[in-house]
Amino acid sequence: AQSVSQHNHHVILSEAASLELGCNYSYGGTVNLFWYVQYPGQHLQLLLKYFSGDPLVKGIKGFEAEFIKSKFSFNLRKPSVQWSDTAEYFCAVNTGTASKLTFGTGTRLQVTL
Amino acid sequence: AAGVIQSPRHLIKEKRETATLKCYPIPRHDTVYWYQQGPGQDPQFLISFYEKMQSDKGSIPDRFSAQQFSDYHSELNMSSLELGDSALYFCASSGGLAGGSGRNEQFFGPGTRLTVL
Image 1 (cartoon, helix red, strand yellow):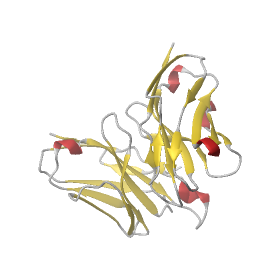
Image 2 (cartoon, chains in turn red, orange; image 1 turned 90 degrees about the vertical axis):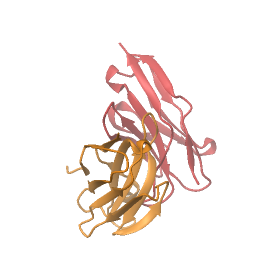
Image 3 (cartoon, one colour; image 1 turned 30 degrees about the horizontal axis):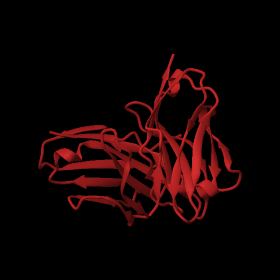
């Protein structure tokens, strides 16, 4: 079974700082990778996804992520965070077409003014 | 664009009562997934349906059951509710052309917040 690790549980950044959130997965086969964001009291929204092809994927709101197969990683980055990026960020994987998502434990990002 | 609809949005029940949560997928999506997110936790997969048949099962208690109907909406039935069932229950849907990458991406509904007293 696949598993996902997010090593940063709580990150506090000042506005305009750069962001990188780590995500590692364990699974020996082909995976689909996702980053979701959950604003306080709201549902999960897809930031970006990787299925195949260019390992550097760009998502909404200026976020990007890089899939490094050799490291089983899919780290999320943003060059300059905004106060409105304060939210919980979940990395997730699934391993086939229309298969369940396995989520990491989430990273709570707090951006201060 | 139409999104996943869940009802009710909030539900308060007493211990040992039953609850039914409903999910209406995005039109033309044929796969529905249910997830449970406890306070401060990550979403945990419960069960999924494809074309009205159960396609996968996760950590769903025996007290819970679910089904997908002919119009593709799904209902999660929860009986003998316990305090620990208090959580946010998300439904997600996916679909698209057969074999297309659309099946890999799940769109989430707003969730039903269940509180068991």
